[in-house]
Image (cartoon, rainbow over all chains, first blue to last red; front, top):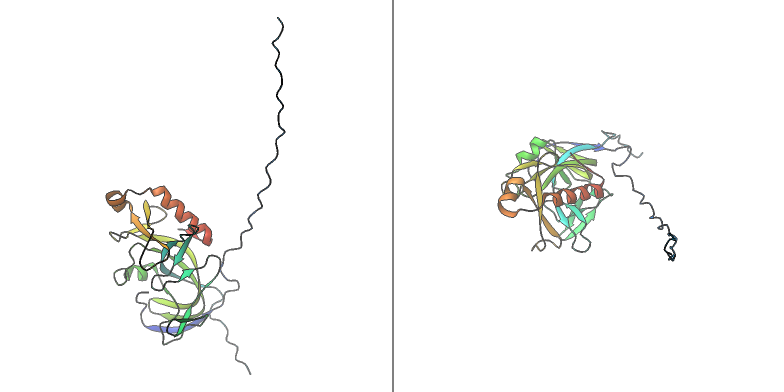
Length: 48
Length: 191
């Protein structure tokens, strides 16, 4: 990948922790709350 | 008695390199791909240097040797990386920072490392005019070619605002979203 020039030195880099992203925990999708089904109600005309 | 060699650094070294972006035709996930070799960088796992011991055969996790061309390449600085823009075809690619560790062969302008993981994406190189675009502050677009003779994946083309307006008129929003998804998948930042 391109020119990186003349060799200088061999080095060893040993990080205490590898720089990898922490594994993400995908939260479980909760079940949708079941809505109580509404019953049809008979509407009576109001008495005047 | 076994020789114990103390490491020179207890941290990673940070280099600069170019990547291509590829899209899987199966599930549309985006992948970082090396420029020279057709290697995809795994999200969440270190990328390891390959040593070619025989034609067509890869051996994993071989430290780069002094007098070889092996290792994961990165430049020492943005300046060193951009100096190489005209040497190799980096059109349409992304440039960013990379963490390097393990055995590292240090050269004048760059490194050859044993292990690497991307750290950030910073610049895009327009595939038409080679303008260097800041991914953080300048407008851009990403185009996709579904089929390519050299890849099983869909191939990205990075466009500066001017070339996009002139030749393609792609939606910039889609490019930003795709790049954000890629960054999130790899756990890296856009700087």
